Length: 633
Image (cartoon, rainbow, N blue to C red):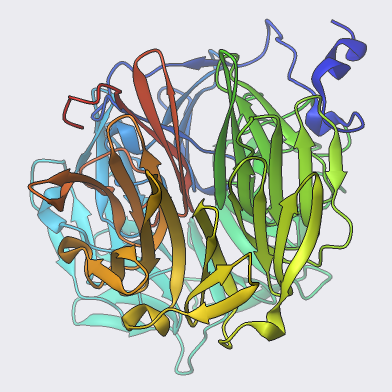
């Protein structure tokens, strides 16, 4: 397939990040997991933002803890397996991973405790509950040790209580090295600590907050610091500063037979008692978070932008070559484009039998063809996409950006930067016929008869807050949600008034207007809960009182409302003349990628409804039957 073939369906001038990835037989292959905990759920999240690595020397497998879940590399087979929240993890944000001496794989969530892998399903280590873990490691016998906010724990197996529990050494540990249970070192925000029978002893009389990490190699304790590398000879207790030539932070170190592997100012090298040997002159422009030693000749390098394999003389990228980790053709001179896991806006465009999912992130606009599963990144000159809507005729997608205003994308892949609209644009909605409304810090804009025009300046609003949401369901009025209350705009008179009552002074985060014959029903999401009503008659939904409502979506097939909050996802249905919670989803009872929901949209087809849920940790999807008479389960 030639590069010319890729240009047939591109929205912008051709760039490597816009091109689909060609299939290469010799490339890494993804293996599907044999089981799911939540079969109605799936997640799409990049796993290139690596936080921690673990190497299994028996199977020669590599495990990656990422912001999008756990990635398992079967190196010899050149295959990989993705694990996300649908496989039992409490959300996709994984802090650490380790393989103990019994080949048991453990992972620590950023907030919700320790998990272990059994039969392709992640199970909670319930004995410690939702303890907040700061690091995991194994000692010389292969036993797991967990550093937490509550203390230090030694764990033999998933079914038993910790075999040893040590009190915390002040602040949670940043890193630990444990030769055996009577030879324990850790570093935290106060410095280096050594555990002795009487308790923790700080290695220095002064507080040393600049120690980032540490490693043990024979009788040497190595310290990675903000301004260089230090070696402590444990036999003499003498301290030696290793000459790095530059006063640069050492972010991570790992033992080597002659010293340590170390990340120093974006470069990887081997540090010995006499100096440095860098494996490459190339300096990485992304933070290096972790190192895993395969052998004296090989080190695996985890970064915020992917995995590298390093030897004594070179480094090279080791990526999955699969979206959403890689979007576009690979490039020899730079890392390929990746999906941004913080999803801020979503919209489904229906083009006949073809559904397109539009995804707005801080790193730009992405498009996913739900039939072909083909990803694209759109180079609009935009960053930080805040809102996306599809026109009623499905021919135009409007995209609001914090940095570059408003853009229109036609079905024929024409991209228009709308002139005369001042960024940032924070809110969009479709109105009657071909009308649309957009709002930002500069005012309110109206699209009618193929022209955008400003109808209200920000200075003319009766409140001091900024616009955050817009909604319209009937011709004669438009609802404006601001950080200082709910407003009503009447296009015929061009008057803006503040809604009376509690919503007149509450922060309005999202609005959704549902047509009801000649009238409408307005849903108002606030930082105090969810309201429904019209004009001066508002009813709060008791089950969501005091919740921060972040986003709303309506399923017209089942007449149900989906609500995103800062603590999970809810579905409301009308029952006995009131609105009742039919479902409540969070990271503990579903495959939701994170508890904070940042965007929602709904797509239907083939008798199914898919709720697409944006989170800070990727894109989640919940599927259910689209039968209006069926209960949503």
